[in-house]
Length: 529
Image 1 (spheres, one colour):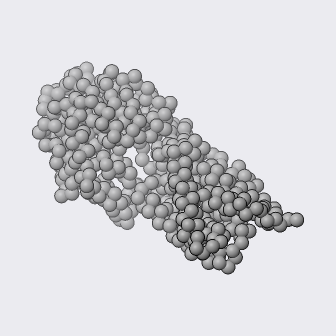
Image 2: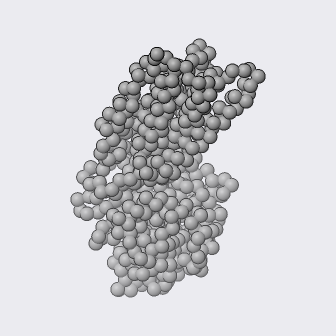
């Protein structure tokens, strides 16, 4: 006989286990989809809103369709066919998306908006069928498990509890364990493979011929995986060599090298350079150089021997720390970085091996609480539009920073802007002025970055010029070059009416609005020039 009738107890236990794994796979697909897209398009609020919103739409359709489907075909064979197809399509989605995402990565690097948007939409559409089918699981399982209408509430409650518990596992396991260990696509395959196995086993117990007809599914998944999962997740920019790539719990981390031997840390979509390193050159004419200048806004004469210790919130691969170590050999430094994968890349490929650098793997604000007092400079280099952690932008945060500064200490932050839109930097200025008496503004040349320097004492831009003129002849050329560039980059300090607080910090709204305006008014064309 190819059709069998499993014992009711076994049948019910398998049904409940399948519901649990269905809930687990649903959330795993959602979180893994965010990483799949985040590797190319980033993890801004716009990306998250699209993922969560469309997943909810697909699930809603699945709940409706699943209920109607269960009433018309209330059979276990139908249920397990749905499970098998949902699992198979969940595994196929990242494999089919892989070449689409590679094309998207090249489009992002080339600022091809049409291809970028098209790829984004295409990948999201790939999840419509598997998530809709996963949405069918709960109503269909209730219909199968319900044997007595008087027990309907209890039965539904048990199944929803199992599904929700599975969802909890599916929320934490991909992010904390599987994605950092095996990568995003293989995380999809693990969850879809487990659910597919349950679907085929359940179908085998009901109808062996039907199960045999679907045995091609695991074979096809394996073949697609072999074909798709080769090469880097994102190609290196033109003219550069990929030295290192890793998916961490937070980012897609890459280290690339150009023909001149300069190495760069790239994260996620690869648009921003988060750290730079060269074995002999430490003057990069970028934002990191400006972190050397902050203390020299103090009243003259301010000489290098007054530097005591520094802290960096947003250490990345250590460019700021390396420059300070070169200018002030042996200077005690604390660096806070949330992503241990970035720290590993910095140590292996970007020279972040200074013995006087204490690395704290922690969220920036919480890590700040582990610092002592008396810092000459605290740098915040954790703002990268559109990734601006709001908790590092508020009055309360900068009050905590102030408590760790020396009497002549300074805080330096790197803030994004566009050529015409300074809303974020103006709001950050207003927020800093709520805590510090003076804020100075410097626009980094050839970039969309503004450096804000807030001082513990009332200070003047003239102090920077005077301290540059009084710099000892034996001072580091890296420091001298940074001060010279800073003097030429000073612009008027402007504060808006918006002050960020822990209670009200609409940073994401400001940033998203800036990004949309930038794109709508031809910002992509500016980047191409």
